Length: 200
Image 1 (spheres, rainbow, N blue to C red):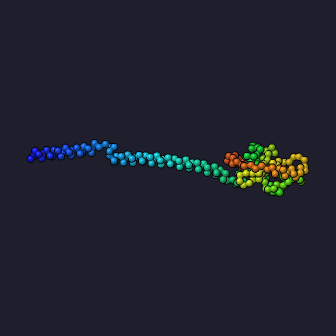
Image 2 (image 1 turned 135 degrees about the vertical axis):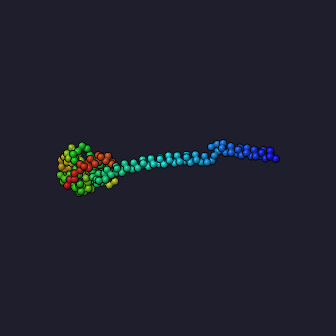
Image 3 (image 1 turned 120 degrees about the vertical axis):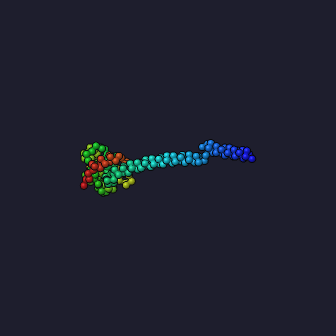
């Protein structure tokens, strides 16, 4: 009887040890807890990478907005009229190397050529831009409020024989040129604004 008991006890011990050996030798691939830990680590790395990329994109977008705001603010201290005069001269002025940019506002009904009694009159208010010298040229125009202007082909000083006849002047009025004015570079616009002089 004692011998039989020892055999049973020994067999139980072997079975017990075998069971422990299976748990200890279990591979990491078969361990669900290990798989979960690896998945969590991968998700954390992907989340960190995604967050970093979004932060970089936000920073880039912020920089672009700052540049755009800076460009808009460069002209914010000037009036829309000053900006218009400078842009018109920048695009249409015969000479950009000027000492002063003189602005004369001419009301509708003013003769194109005050020295000629047969002269037709301006059908609208116009602006006359000119440099300080005759060789700088002149730009006479009316603004349309939409970024375009009507350019009148009239000189700063009239030469010729008078009377020229009303038909001659009406032809100048009928052949005004519609021109779209570009924004130009802010620094060039500001340079011309600083040269502006309003004539009475």
